[in-house]
Image (cartoon, rainbow, N blue to C red):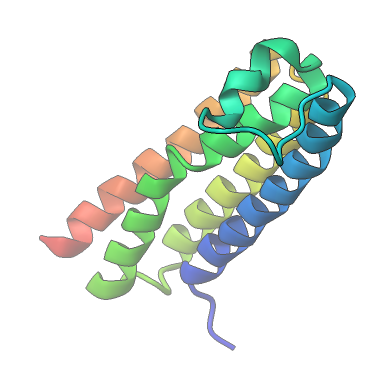
Length: 142
């Protein structure tokens, strides 16, 4: 069985889908409770509801949006490593797992407790993993 940087990327993709369903499962009932009938809604964005939603419902939406932002750089970096021959390098794999697992913990934290200082430290830790991966991807392509 080979160890590969693609696995943590696939795990983070699946986690993003878990967050999508968690968000929908929280926001739709909250919107209904507010009297919003989405079958009659025209235009707008889900984020337009955020100010009116209970914070705990909005937090899941915020996290899902975050998973569509910085992790896109992670996916590109993983693809570069895969194409450049760095997919099975032990350090690259460790950094990739570090990034994916910290982002999952960040998601759970933001969706439940959402204390900003801890959330920021988790974001910083995952970003450091991503910086390491990006440098190693660059080196693998030179």
